[in-house]
Amino acid sequence: MTGEHTTKVLCATRFTCAIANGKVREMSFGIPFKSHPEARDTLLDLFMHKWGTPKTRDEEGKQTMVFRDEEPRVEAREEGDAWHFEIR
Image 1 (tube, rainbow, N blue to C red):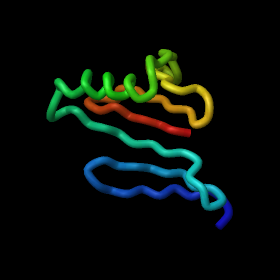
Image 2: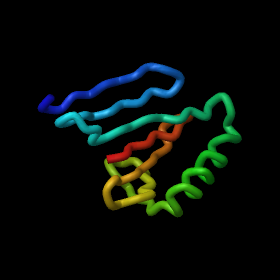
Image 3: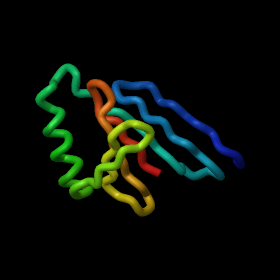
Image 4: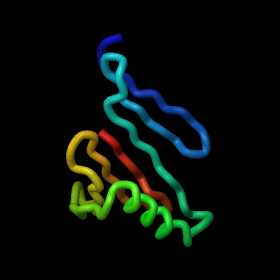
């Protein structure tokens, strides 16, 4: 399979994968915390335990936390009542 395709799987957490040449090239997902606001900081602590302290950048007018700048790049930002992740 050649070219780039995007597949969305709908469930409690939505994952979006960009696939090129049969391999996942990018993945994004959100982790909502609206129903449990206290989970916001707990989730951030878990992310930092996994990937370390992020570098904060202002990208496209939004504050983005870059946990890993090399491949695969791992970044997160708060969007409304959820953490949104991109791994590329």
